[in-house]
Amino acid sequence: MKKFVLGLICGIGLTATTSVYAIDTIQAYLFPAKFVFNGVNKVVEASEYVVLNHQGHAYVPIRFVAENMGALVNYKEDTKTIQISDAPLSKKLQLNADFLSTATEGKLLGIEFGIGSAKEDVFQKWGEPHRMGKRQVGFYAWFDYNYFFSGPNETVGAIGVSGETVRYSVEEVKKALGQPKYEGLSMIEAGWEMSYKVGEYVLFFSADRKDGNVHYMTFKKIE
Image (cartoon, rainbow, N blue to C red):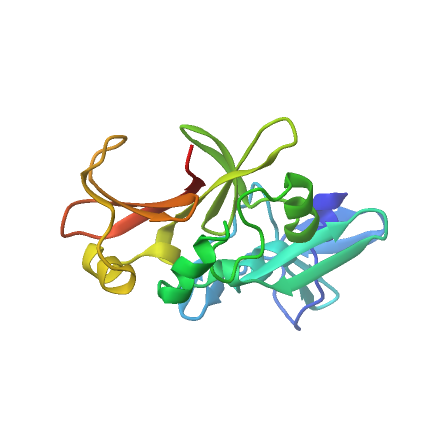
């Protein structure tokens, strides 16, 4: 039911149809539509989402569309409400003096949930994570932000940022944040690492090589 509700939104007029697809008393047709977001083709995974044609109107998966346009989708089961909201999570992380200042408070610039935030609060505001994975330990991801929860109260113990959201060259990071406290071969994975101490917290930037590009950033409290 939840997947169905999040998968439909009223759409645009169409004329072509394919095979019959029935849900309860609604007769609809599978529609092999293609999606292009700001010039970039995106493939709809048939195992999770479908596009339907009902009475000449397209019904597209709202989660797929909204998230590809940088918005968060959250479904409230008790009120049967679909919430769609803009989120800075889909925008490139801005590295500057304010970024370091904010990091001393245990937060990333522009991101509301920082170190110590409750897992329940994150899920309540951001909805279901886009994916789950493991980087040494398990995490929940919203866009390029990986949240690691720990402790008996399941609070945010670390935040990882990957992909285009943190795609800077090593030199760009140094220019924005100054010389790191440590720089050298990574002790965890192949590649180059830089670290910045900010109050009780530390920022790790992982790059492919000394003069290469950052592919991951880790933010955590100093143990």
